[in-house]
Amino acid sequence: MATTTTTLSDEATKAVDDIEETARGAHNNIADAADAVRTAANEVATRIPDAAATTRSAIDEVDRQLKSGSDEMLSAGTTLTFGLAIGLLIGGANRLLVAAALVPVAAMGLTLLGRANGRSRKEPRNS
Image 1 (cartoon, rainbow, N blue to C red):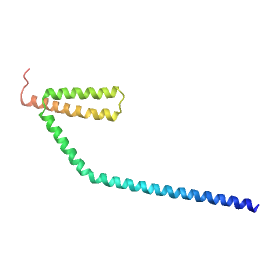
Image 2: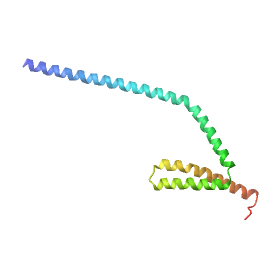
Image 3: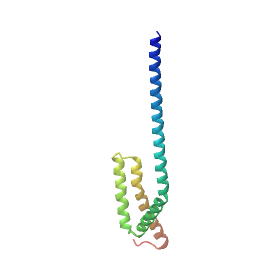
Image 4: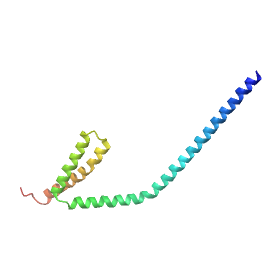
């Protein structure tokens, strides 16, 4: 009987050792993953000001082009991008993608509306 108890005790000890080794390995993997996330977050944080400046200049350029474009170009662009958004919606695309496709529609449409409102206040239309 003493032999059976010793054998069970050795197997239990080995099982506990295996579990502890697995736990240490998991702990090391989690620590490595946390370090990788921390490094990536630091890199992203250092690049945010540059990305914001680039985005700002791109938005300013788009605004300048919208204001300098003709009414016909804006109307055609609005119609085209609206058609694209509706096609994405009917095709079953992700709602976020459809919403992103509607952003240029809103920008061009609001520019057209602003021109129409400004024109009716300043000078009468020639019909």
